[in-house]
Length: 285
Image 1 (cartoon, rainbow, N blue to C red):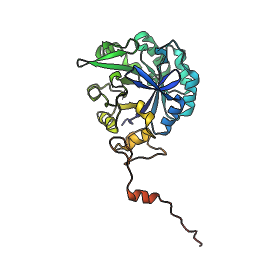
Image 2 (image 1 turned 90 degrees about the vertical axis):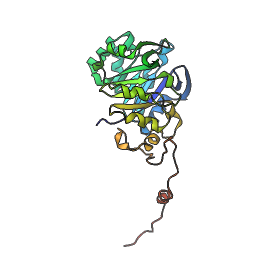
Image 3 (image 1 turned 60 degrees about the vertical axis):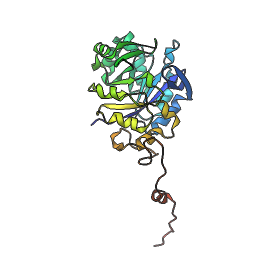
Image 4 (image 1 turned 45 degrees about the vertical axis):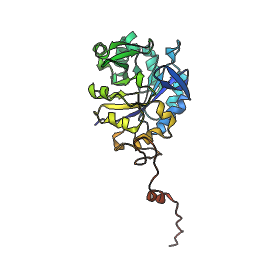
């Protein structure tokens, strides 16, 4: 059985970790390397760094920032944002990144995915797709033009899915509003390979609603993780079976201490009594 994953999605603009809302407004959170380090310690299974700086100005990939991130974590990390050639991909893998996420380049230079997949293997690539639902159908959303472009089924028919190890779906209209993941989409499409569903986390139940659908599904958490102490440990503490996940151990254990709203509850009196320090007199034998 595939291990489930809760993935920390860190959106970066101009070197700053930002809170995203509907792909329109961005508020500063802090240093991306610190956020990645904390996610690694707080029981995230993987980290996805999405640098959106190139959407607003012509920029190079921020190698010094990514090096700090790579040195700060001990879990798999993926990078997406502005990758346009094979040389850049090689530099990212040399930094320690495990996968590259391609989005806009699937429109503009589809040969890039073929080159990276051939050189480094399909397991090194994630197909990233932003979706808008309109009149019951899903359309691929162009974040540069801020509009939908083509029906998802038509888009997928033009993509060689064998070039990618997994697929990541995000939903701009759900971004930052804690309304839950798009369960209808997650339950309708089965790609027979690992799929990440992003956008909409509000409570741990939103995660369990996705993960129970099929074994190929994992979820991403973005904004919410920046405002909860030990966020991924807390979320997993509210779920029934932590052994489902790739990362099971943490210095912070909240198992059975979190309610379905994701709030840490007061332990029982017996549990607290067991935590009280009890001095043991030195025994002379």
